Image 1 (cartoon, rainbow, N blue to C red):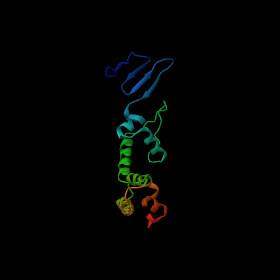
Image 2 (image 1 turned 60 degrees about the horizontal axis):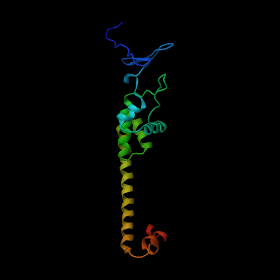
Image 3 (image 1 turned 60 degrees about the vertical axis):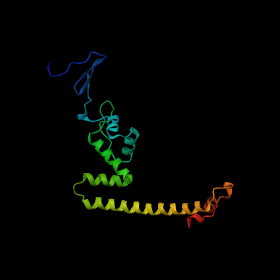
Length: 172
């Protein structure tokens, strides 16, 4: 026996070797459990700082490829999945939709694609954000005008804010 190999543990019916689990009984079953063959979903979630449902959702949305399964049925995610999940989360944090993120991911892995495509997506997102800012400012102005018309005293059913909303005046 190789003296560099750790001995099997005596606990239970399974012995553990470095990177392998040996199950004793009617036969032998050896399964790789080291990270060189992949990470379990919980390990990916922990390293990427997301929950398991997020990973499953990203898989359903085709942002992450479905990983291969070990003979035990566990998914074996490559280490690169953690980086990909972090990329997705950061892209969401700056406003990209899942469809836009899917496109960014495809640009990221295709060496034939150009930086101008990435820049174009970012510029479109900036224009979208600017449009939303204009809309939010208009909403704020409308609400400020409505609140200036309400004294805050008296019955709610006579409030000029509610009356304006009811009469569609607020939309003008």
